[in-house]
Image 1 (cartoon, rainbow, N blue to C red):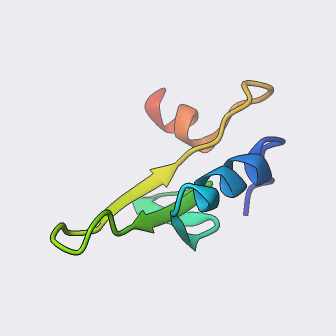
Image 2: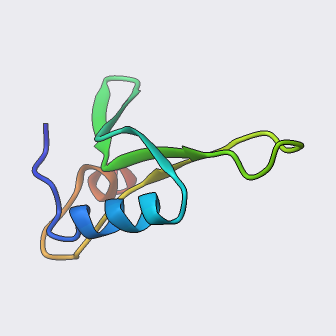
Length: 74
C-alpha cells in the first residue's frame, strides 16, 4: 500500500466537512495486471430526490510520482 501524501488528512477532513462520507481510504483499483490505489473514495447523497454521487480523489503534492501518473505514462 502506498504512503499517504502530505495533504491527505487535510483533504479528507475537507471532504468530510463538506458532507462526504469516506468509503475507502485508499480505494483499490485493478486495471488488467496493474494494481493501483486512489487516495480516497467518498460518496455523498445530494438530496432525497437525486441519486448519490461517488468520487475518487487522488491527492498529489507533486513531490514525487504516483501510480496514477505512472499508469498514464504507459
